[in-house]
Structure formats: structure tokens, C-alpha cells
Image (cartoon, rainbow, N blue to C red; front, side):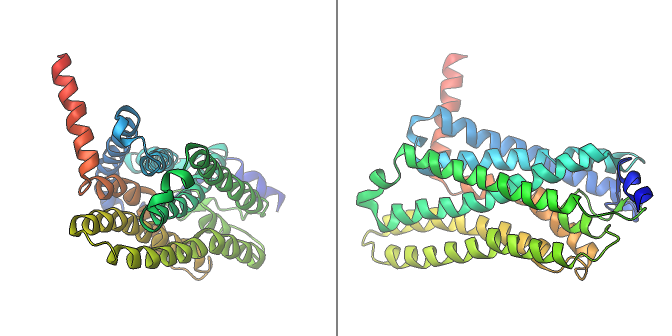
Length: 312
């Protein structure tokens, strides 16, 4: 067992799709394209939300936080994926794996909480419009954002530390694209029932419970939207809430599948591609979903580009 643990200090091998080398270049191009879109889209939302005074609202404050999470979330894993897909070396150092594990879990849990906060913001905006500015004041917005970031950090410290205490077998092959809890549990030489129970309980708290709260809040929002007399008002409220709901279902659906299914029974090929989905695809589509049908963001972009032409 000592020899097994000491071998883990040498690092790990991230298998990815190395068993199918003909697919590596396809995955490399696809992930690189997705990563560049993620960087551009989320950076644009952060920039527009900070520069355009019309977007200085709680909704765009939280959207900027979500974009910041997505930028850091993908950057914690995608560069290492690209390095491993490009060359023959599939290794990641022990320190790199531990850092990736802590950061990835931190930001993933932060996004879970942040999506609940954004649902609460939409609930207040639609169901309590006269009290919206009072309830969602700047101090409360900063407090809710801080709870999301610190809550995610607490989750990461608990889960990551608990997982890293497991004695590992001699082989260092992590059958995944990145270092995350379900994949690392599979390397353990001992019974992992307790770890799986803790993983399921914590993930239920951060996924199934928030998702239930969000869905209940959107049932209330739907009832309020149907009472709006103005067709334009109904359409605007529906489009804004629909964008958030699509993001919620994409993120929570993939996270629940990847983390709440038993670690030993989940098919690894499915698990690794699900992790690829919520670590690469979801952060890429979030800005697209929020901006494609959002006139406020499009208007802010036109105003920013117009100022740029005037200056030049």
C-alpha cells in the first residue's frame, strides 16, 4: 500500500480517448473551438455588463458572475485536455491533478448555487416587481454572490480532501479527461462505499435540491407571467426566464448524471463524455443562450461598437 501511494506522487495518466487514437485530433479541434468560443462569449458578457450602464442591474451582475465561473471552470481543465490530446504524453502531475480537483469542484458547486440565486432574482423580478429594487439591493446581491463562491469552496474542500485520503492502487490510469471525484474513486484499493455515500449526499444537496427549488420557483413565475396583460411584457418575461431554464437543465442534468450515479456502476465511457459535456460544452453555450434572444445585450454590443468606430 505504501508503494501504491508513493506512485501516485509521480502523477497520473489521463486516459481520455487514447484508446481510440484516431479520434484524438477530432476531439482536439472540437474542444479547442469550444474553448475559444467560451473565452470570447463569456469575456464579452463580463465586458458589456461592466461598461454599459444600462446593464448595471442584479440580473447582469449575476450573469457576469456566472461568466466568470465558466471562464475559470473551463480554464481549470481544458488546457490540460488539449495538451494530452495533442501529444503522446497523457500525464498530469500529482500537484496538477490535486489543483484541478479542488478548483473544478469549487467552481462547479459555485455554479450550482449561482443558478439558484439567478432563479431567485427572476422570481422577485416577475412575482414581486414593485419590491424588486428593495429586495435585490446592491448589498444583498454582493452577499448572495459571496455565498455562492464561498459555498462552492466549502464543498470542494470537503469532497476533495475526503477523496484524496483514499489509498490508491499502483496503476495511475484515470479513465477520464480530467481529475474529478468519480474517476479518482475508481483508483482506490479499499471499499469506497462511504466515499460514494458522501459524494451522493453532497451532490444531492448541490444538484437535486437546488434543481427542485428552481423548478418550483419557475412554476410560480409561469403563473405570474400568465397574469401579465401586456403581450410584450409576457414575451419579454418568458424569453428571459426561458434562457435561464435551458442553462439550468443543461448543467444540472449532466452534473446529476455524472455525480449522483454510483461511481462503481456508472459506465466509464458514458461518464467521461458527460464530464466533457459539463466542463466544455455547457460553458460554451451559456453566453449564446443568454444573448441570442436578448435585446439588451445586443443593444449594449451595438453601442460599444459604435463608440469604437467614433473613437477611430
